[in-house]
Length: 428
Ligand code: T4K
Image (cartoon, rainbow, N blue to C red):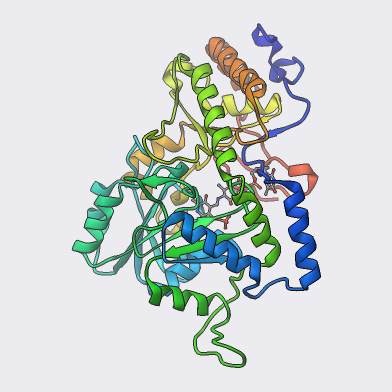
């Protein structure tokens, strides 16, 4: 057990873990059932284009959420792009800056301007009080993001959207299996979009879905995701290829059978982190509404550097040296990424809470890949680093940059770009 600052790997001790612990390790359902379905798919020789597994997955998700239509897609980003286009959004659309960059890119990709709105610091979701100030004659919609699976203030957003005749879309990439006022996420606004990427607690390998109660919109989306085909040789609309393939769908069906197990594991992990870190000064774990359905897929800390002394970025560096690949999701906010940084160089002035929260957050590993022993060790490292906060800060400041100069390379399979302290790419 590490007891002294010099026991930390960053200062010469042995790493606490031999193998890297990632945020976002995929969860898998029953392997035998997965392989059985793969076998069946191979026998059928049906791999894509609205195959039987896609249809079954769509039915099961729609039933689970209590929504009329579910259209599964190749990933969450393309699903967002198609939903935006099907809703005929144009001009300006109001979104939070504190989200994964795909929310903004899905608009910009179609030459629609994302207008960045601040968040409520208590919930990390878009602040309804800020939205009205951002509405202009060019505004056509609002995209709320249920960040960390915590629902936006949906009632307030619905009210604003109705008052200004704006379309309301939700990026529900994190919200699968969660509820708001006892109704499942996925049934609100004009439509909602899920991501089923491997880093989500429920994955279809790559994948996503649009869910909506609007049958006309759903029919349009079905055309759009399949080149506009309405039967053989009959194209009646402009479209793209957003289809989910059969492998992804059968993976989804198998994982769906274990959804409650994944949630239970996430919840246990979350409670273990809470118990271990509950009384650490300067560290707060974001909370969930336990009266609602909740997937607990993110364990997110807010670090108050004024109390911990050691900075958030230094804690990330300390954990990484121990082989705990903590993440700074969603630092630094979309408004500080290109092309938005160049388009709106002063956006930060109207996003004070986004700026503040983005500098405080730290995501830790959870899911089926970690258990109580790992969590105890991770929390012990954090407590030790904070106990020696001022010393750690000073020693790491002497070392130079507090964040790794390159993005971590997963199994050596990814290219990486040298970045500066802000995560901006350095010229190479
Ligand atoms: N809206 C929101 C709010 C979102 O968060 C996202 C996606 C989207 C929209 C778009 O949905 P998709 O088009 O992605 O379906 C990851 C994911 O790529 C992204 O899906 C996700 N949000 C975002 C929050 O995180 P990175 O750049 O952090 O991924 P990466 O490659 O660093 O992976 C994270 C960790 O996960 C790694 O350290 C290792 C582990 N991992 C990852 C993969 C892909 C595995 O263990 N196995 C794997 O197969 O973006």
